[in-house]
Image 1 (cartoon, rainbow, N blue to C red):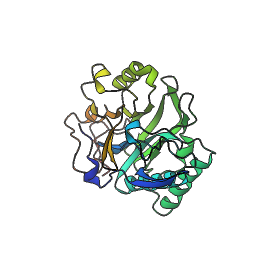
Image 2 (image 1 turned 135 degrees about the vertical axis):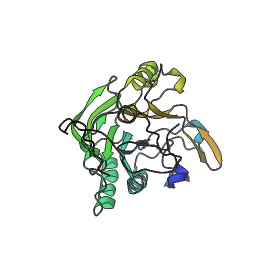
Image 3 (image 1 turned 90 degrees about the horizontal axis):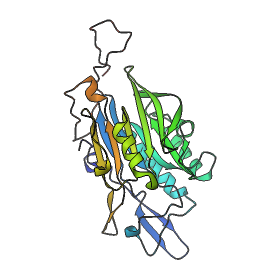
Image 4 (image 1 turned 180 degrees about the vertical axis):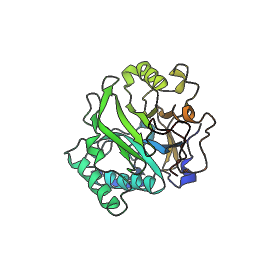
Length: 288
């Protein structure tokens, strides 16, 4: 699969510590290690950040703790640092699931820390965390999209599909390429519909599919560059396998360059040979 191993980027999921009534718990800040994959237009990624108060995977129990604290200050601030680290290392776009709703205290912890970290560098359009937020089904959390404005821009608000489980954005790359992007947080009760949506989406499709395996997906598009990963991590030296798959699919890079092969060793600079419609016939350009 064409995603970059996190150890190659020194982006293994960090731990954080939180206190409960009876104990102090140290564990990874999410059960979903991000997937990062190179495209012609730069590296894209996805991460389920775990809404504060979310239940934890049963195999990941620590001292009997079954859920994250609803007061997510420590969790959200650590997550902001992790997200910022991804952008510092070259990620151009990041799809997020389980983002607290704008206006809540937990959303404030996340966005305020991101703004503080990004104040000088301007690597992230941090305001998009709110403007591109969409409620996921009947949950209190939602999906959102962050991006480096030197690499991508997003026009308007997302359109909701898949029964409010997929937010679709109008994204333009720095060279003018228009790329549909879907951020999916699938419904366990509608797994086949999610699998069909993912397999047939033309553009970048990222997210937590909430299906048990890639075998549910129908025939994949021939030009698709696809990473489907069942999240796994170590907690107190105990392996934990999550019963879902996270995924990144890119059907556009090989439309433009059929020979494109993503670098697996690290994040590559964008190298697009896309020709915008207004360009003279036969004239191609490369912004990087």
